[in-house]
Length: 290
Image (cartoon, rainbow, N blue to C red; front, side, top):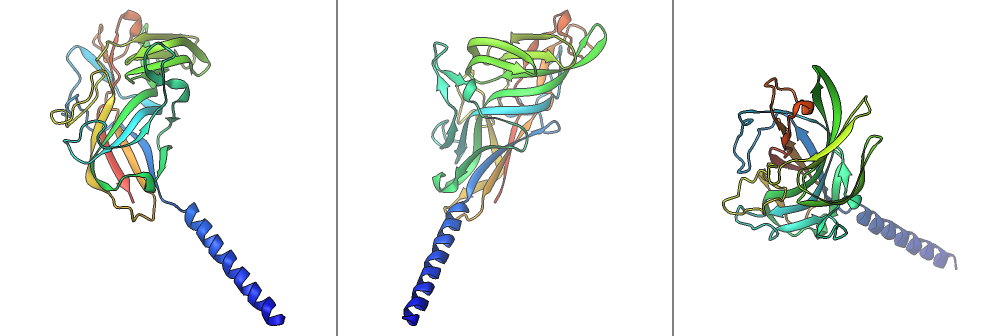
């Protein structure tokens, strides 16, 4: 009887050990983790992914980012991979509440710099050798400086750069902006930090810069905000990963907020008719850590 008890205890201990080990293995499943980074010193690109300066007659500033959201994330094997033919790992919820298909802002994932945007088990990522990342940006929240009657103020701007976004009511601090409709790419709202002033508007359709260095082989639809960037070294997913793969999307905010000047002083002064002409990000450099 004593031998039976000892044997039973050993078997039970072994079962408990292997059960815990199996549980730990599941808990440690590696993930693909995607984060954003903002860089005001990163090269400023145009729609074709070429270095670009601020247009004559315009001025610009590098905003101070608070948060961002994206609508779509894809890994592309080559420069000839057409949009949607790569490994699509995220597509944000959409709605027809506003009459046509639009990004549902109420369900958007909005994150700050360094915060996890998406986290996907690597077992769900197709094995492959990926050269490019494509990410469709949807929303930006940042601080900018404006001038009024010779005095500079700090304010906060919400910039909707997705192809089309359905917005109920969105907020900048304590300021509410009831929209309850679709807004095409370029809708923005602004509020001063220390004064009771708020306004909103619409940048020209199609004026938002969307860098795509492979436009000649893999174009993007007009009015979308699918920014394309090339890994410095291809990302290889072979299915044998045991650790997380963290992809950081470094976005160029180098003079990314641009307006047409009335007074040529490099200061954004909407009260004298200086209009926003571009709020697009100015380039994407993806990197990863395995």
